[in-house]
Image 1 (cartoon, rainbow over the protein chains, first blue to last red):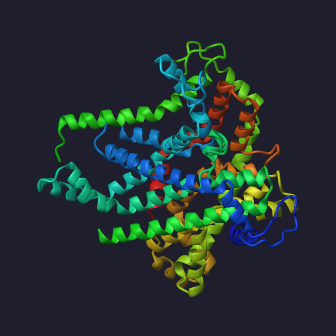
Image 2: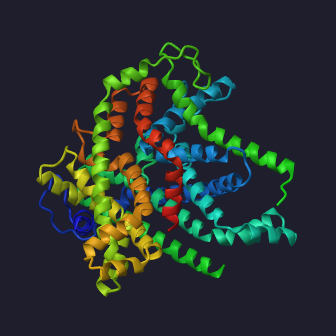
Image 3: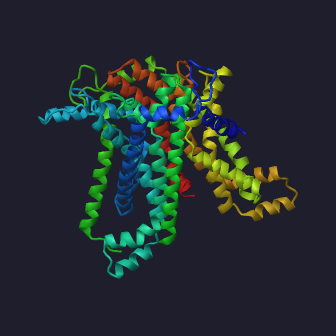
Length: 273
Length: 274
């Protein structure tokens, strides 16, 4: 019942309202068809959608490469590997907002940010990381990767524990090198972990909000706005509820489509291997 | 299997190198927060005369002390509600093979994908009309709803795979009704899965910022992320002070994490694998 009240009913309402010109100024919504969707894509939403998908893809790829690499390293006989795992996983439990603020300082403007201070010490030119749209986007990506690589790693580690050692040893006896063993023995057995990591990473990446809100708040000049931050902006600053709802529906559709494609593709691969 | 000495040393060095790389931001965070304002040395060099003034100032000057209590209450109430509701929903969903039950399960699974933003606007208006904006009640109502799909998914899978049906049948033969069976047989067996759900739900509710940002805007009853947000807005670039408040805000959850890290990591990995 609570679920119906909190998610189902309002979601359905949201979809309906996205077709209206509902806003703070016009509390009595009237039906305007797909007008909001058209308006949305003519404005900021088009680039924001593209940006959202771009960020999500880069984050997912980098996070999984790094996470898998770390998992392979820490699965081996490293002294104190449990402590290392704990440390790398720790950012995951911290609030994304806090992490966002931390990185805002590290990549802060010249004379203030930690990285810029180092650049100055080394006699290099300082960079206004967050003042430039391109670099700001990468700072957001780095922040997210820093925070969630640990969780990716932990899932891979759990997957690696399910790989029987005899199989690996048998392959080694047959003369397979490290990479060959990884590709033909470990990778197929890791398939479920890969599916989970890619799905979670992608959905999380598409819904990204806190970090961007803390780091750039969509700026400079709306250049790092993603769908989530745009929804918030339209909702809270402009009070155009109908438009905000329309964007939310777009986000939902993207998450749904991508998750579905990914799940279908990866499931098939899992079955083949 | 024999691993050569060099490769072993190399892995160790790489692992520690990577970990240190991961720790750099944390080091900066701590170092800056204990640095007095007069100290202008770069953030990478350890402060020569450390001080805890910023922590005291942040604790007294920010809404954090109250926010910690609010956050604890909100997280506890929401977790309790979601676990209770999810257990009651998951048990029949896992055991019944009827058509209605699979449709219901499917409806819950759609919720896994649905971003909360879709429901945001209509809910906001409802909460406004109910006069609940600015209080914690919208949060306590919304969180269980948002977290339900995931929790039900985990619990249903767990019941299907790891709770033997024979126990329930035996209980039924001994005259147990469905509710007593659930409470006395299924729930105790569910304990590991419930632990996992508790951990995952608490972390995400505790850290959630978007929901309070909408429903608690302008209120003095705030959760921790909201308190941080307000505080940072107040002291725009007094970074040592801000960082001290960030550390205070992280302390409770990090402490719990370090104390129970084995369970957290295992629960996290296990839950998502299921």
